[in-house]
Image: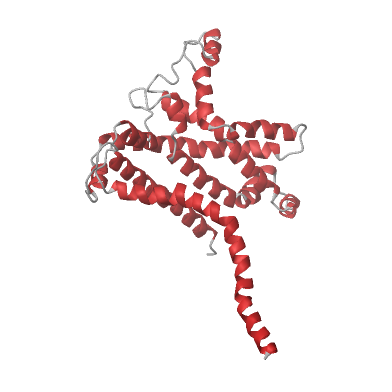
Amino acid sequence: MAADALTMRGRRARPRVRLMPHLTGWGFVGPATLVIVGLSIFPAVWALILSLRDDNLLAPGSFVGLQNYRDLLDDPDLRAATLHTLLYSVLYVPGSLIIGLPIALALNRPIRFRAFYRTCLFVPYVVSAAATGILANFILDPQFGIVNDLLAGAGIARQGFLQDPSQALLTLVVVSLWGSVGLPIVVYLAALQDIPRELLEAARVDGAGAFRVFRAVTLPQLRPATVFLVIWQTIDALQLFDLVYTTTKGQPLDSTTVIVFYLYQQAFQLFHAGYGAAVAYALFVVTLVVSGGALWYARRGEAPS
């Protein structure tokens, strides 16, 4: 009887022993899970509900269904902001790859001070976009900026890089490239170092020159890195805000108003919270479709014919 009692007691204790590792694991991930739910999932759900209401952050609103989304189609200011965002993306995304790849190829060679060059090129990427924008304001100031001082010294008229509607958006692209080209450099450099040396040596033995080796061997091996960078940089371009806020604030003449800054204006300056939330969700859907389309196209290209 005593043996049976001990056996039954041991059986009851086993589930508790098995449960302890799970409780310990949840004890570690629980706080982080609560933070993610509180700062990401809950605001996303609340924004979706808000996009279906006519709220202005000052007084209780009413449920309007999909009316905010219908208004998006008839908003000329949103169309202009979308055009500015697309133009910025078309210049920024390919530009970052076109600049980053040659620099990565150069840094992949056995040159002196290679680690120093890598660090210098990556430092602007870790600097916040807000700090980059503040720095750009000083450097590009039409009266006191060092760039205009150099132009004046060369006999060229001073330029309103951030004040001229015809130059402001292009200037933001250049500033963004300076601040973010470090990522393509690092990603391409890592991909170049992962290319098997046997492939390169076999191509050279077959008589291929440097350009042919690059086109036939190196570029195909860089395809996964390129797909990643296209998706990442596209998302980055569609979410442009910090740089606009710290430099032009959408001016001059709304020539640099992009989608996220327009969202900010609607929600937090004009207090059209419901409409701003609808803009945010429309942008989310577009970003998801563009990213998914790029990923699908890349996988389709890798599939055997």
